[in-house]
Amino acid sequence: MRKGFTLVELLAVIVILAVLALITVPLIINVVESSKKSTAESSAYGYIEGINLMYANELLLGNNFELDGTLLVDEKGLLDGHKVEVEGTIAKGGYLIYKDSKIKEGCLEINEYKVNIENDKVNKTEKGKCGEVPYVFGGKVVNKTENDTHKGIVYLDPTDLTKKCNVELASKNINEYGTPTRIKEGCMKWYIYDDEGDKYKMILDHNTTPTVFYNSVGTNEEMKEVQEALDTDTSNWDSRIKSSARLITANEIAEITGNIDWNSETAIDTNWFYFESNSHYNKCDKNSNGNPVCSPGESSYAWLFDYSYSCLEWGCNIEDSNIYVYNSSSDVAKIWGYWTSSGFISNPKQIWYVTQNGVITVNWINRPNAYGLRPVIEIDKSLLS
Image 1 (cartoon, one colour):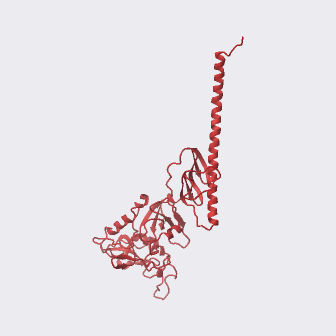
Image 2 (cartoon, helix red, strand yellow):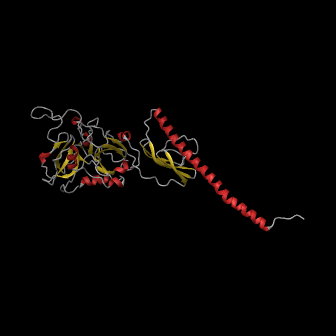
Image 3 (cartoon, helix red, strand yellow):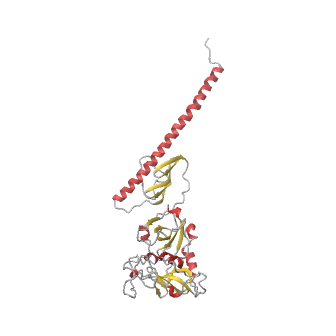
């Protein structure tokens, strides 16, 4: 008569199998998980390589192609609308943040994983989605040269600080007369004039409102029409810089040009000065001995009065005289400069303003169709790193 397994023996076998399962199943799961993660990471490197090949191919074709700022990956694997040829599984979402031709940081969604990238290398891989795209400044910064009197140039779109922006895009953002005057959105050119502390102070290279009253009915203690224009012109700007938008002060102009003894609160109307000489002599004038007070050529402060009518003869950076037509009934006016926010102490009806030929002087606050609005903004240096 054959004997079967006893209950105890069966229970022992079950326990042994359970123990083996407890040991082997996690190992198998870990091997599978590790394999999937390795595949995702390998595909991420393949995506990065595909981007590099795409970039090189665009340059070989003679296209002006640039990777800069925050670039989004869509559900089709397109990078900012560009097709990326990838060996392996293609990313179906995420973002890459480019600075100085390198992926500073990023996240690619490959299968069920999010692959985090830092300095062109995979940093961490885990299950999930990339989530919200972090705020990153997308503007293009150009450092100053030895002879520049500004601190540097920044290209940015004030309505979208993550948007790719550079000199080429800014040069295409013009009005019907071929100049950037009146442009309030899109990629624009800004000059850094103060880099002390943790912020950059920057002035736009053109007037967003060509000409406007400072205050048509009151005194220089209140910015009326020009404040209304500033609010309108910056209405769609990112709140992080919109809150700082203002007019430049006359004392800031004096500090930029090195006129250290000049002060708008004590200056009288005869204390106007040319930027280049901080005196009544312009760069082409001669002193009492008949000698030039400054060398001929382009004004080193032309960036402070670019795109102001007829400044070319005085040394503008622009290529034309920027005759901007102001349409108001039958009236035709030309820009003569822009307002500062500094009132003239001796007369509450006058204000300091920048002229079209690089002078700071005073004029009436209710002067129509002559002086415009040129915004100044402040932005954290950390956003430009």
